[in-house]
Amino acid sequence: MLEKLPEARTDMLTAPYRAALRSRTYATETLNTPRPAQVIPVTTRDGAKLRVHAYGPADGEVIVFAHGWSCAIEYWNPQINVFSGEYRVIAFDQRGHGESESGTRPFGAEQLADDFAQVLDAVLRPGQRAVLVGHSMGGMTIQAWARYYPEQVAERASAVVLATTAARQIPNRATVIPFLNDLVPAPSWVARMLFGTPLPLPGGSAVGLIAKYRLMTPSATADEADFGLSIVRSCRPSVRASVARGLLHLDLHGAAANLTVPTTVIAGTADRLLPEIHSREIADTLADAGYLDRYVILPTGHLVNIEAPQAFNAELHRAIRMGRRGLIAVAG
View: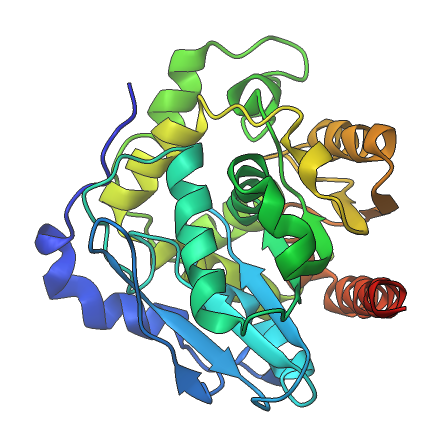
């Protein structure tokens, strides 16, 4: 049974603290939060107000970023700061995350698809296409959109980038807990208990080290590890747990075949949350359908765009160029 996202009332007293976690200042300037050029009002079908920000020139080519589980707009700071000088960069908080409301709809693939379609409605002019970028649950969001809105893909996307994401069997493949699913199959109740329990994530160096070595790699800088953990900690525990329980049962197998534009899939060699097998499966689906542009494996953990921003941004630049070629072909 699909589960409704919890109301945020019990977390309102901590909202300023959570906002501060998302907007901390770092020595690494690309991790710092820029001021949006525009706040775009988006209200979903069930009345949930989503936080949607636009950065960069209004007439620039559009890039739309969809963040993952427990994250927010600020997760994309390493890309917003680099690309917004030339491009119109759009980022939004998934419902229940960041400052977006939970609404009344239960979490699920159709809800993810509908919300994303409404964001695209609000940020794209008729006939305008964008490069769509999704990380983790954001990649699932784009796949869900392609499943439920296949007619919109060629109309609204020029290219797609799916980063460290999955389509199905999330609890059966995660290796966040040592030995489980590496050597011994993990019972589903373990994943539900680990990710689906609404407990706040504490700060501190010990938790930071655990997060760094399970979500990233030892080569991640202190700023990168602190930034990633702060973004995840900023998510309300009730939302984090509720969405996690929904993700355990999400099945989007084959949906990527509807992404009928050049699509890049990026995996991390040390991704323990969504191991490389997930990305390879999606890449195989795209290759069979004839739309896989590139499959890339970077030496990172799950937070690939934070840990390897230059390599990730280079792949995004390449996707933008491929999208332009497609637009030229259509115009011709």
